[in-house]
Length: 399
Ligand code: BGN
Image 1 (cartoon, rainbow, N blue to C red):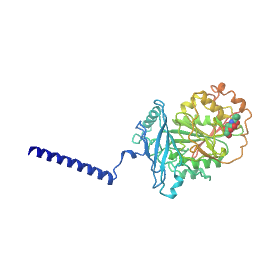
Image 2 (cartoon, rainbow, N blue to C red):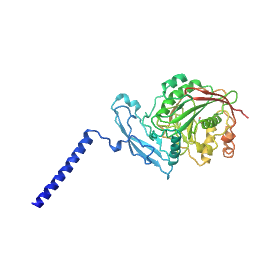
Image 3 (tube, rainbow, N blue to C red):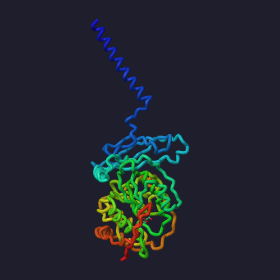
Image 4 (cartoon, rainbow, N blue to C red):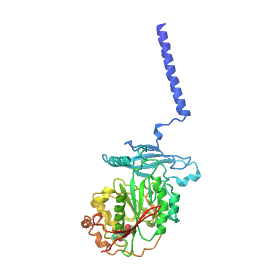
């Protein structure tokens, strides 16, 4: 009798367990409880990387893609370069196909050191309730159609709500991981600037950057000095905000993929590797012109660009040598991401080929300690806060 009772009680316990399992199953199956592997992206506070990311919003309504993260390089505690390969895309809407990213997504995880500086800035911004933005911005499209029409700066600002005077913006939904100064060397190309900003602002906002646009406008009559204007833009930007990173941007290059993130990874990055003018191929391995990104500490270690290249050509090659001499390496996103369309134009007056560039390039290693940020000399003539950018007009002397 006793053994019978014990058996019966066990039987009841088993029944209760089965019942609980059934209830759990029903709740998860039919009530759509959150599942742990569908987290949209890593939170900045978590130091680990996510392997499977459901990228809703990337491929358009009704379609989802699974992105698998591959750790490319892991060096101790330093930042990781993550490369995200798209595994499968099943578009359910024909109209959404133009928004489907057809290639690798590229972004970078932030190293421990950088996270610490961002955390410090969070405190100073008094935004402690906000979380850091996801490592992979959630609203990227991938390949982009470029806009070719020029609208005035006021209209561009109107079309991009949230843009602050002087071309400043940062996400409101989260704390940006990247404080980026975008520096555009400039002279007499208003239409191109309008076209560029029309393309750039929406993309930078989707990339959830904390950024400002600095247009450095060289006064006549001296020959155009692209590299020196970039040094000036860097110096002026750093006076105004605690930027971590600078992106140097030619006014005639329009990005064709918003996965080309305008932030600064572990090594200097040549962002415009594939330009339509060069049939989307690298003209030569060491090319560094067009659009490039470099971290503050690295740029300072290299003493910035040279100030001695007046006229067209060679200043980027000089920088490529500075990068190598400082122990860095030029990195690039895959060619289907680092894509740009160049606005067609004729050579500007005052920017003729620089005949001295070959001689200058022979002396880079000797010059770089004394020719650069530490020898920068210019006069600011005007600071003009436009709705879409800060235009700084400068005079530079050609000695
Ligand atoms: C190179 C220029 C670069 C320019 C690229 C692409 C020189 C130096 C003499 C070898 N370099 O020829 O400055 O970015 O073409 O246009 O002219």
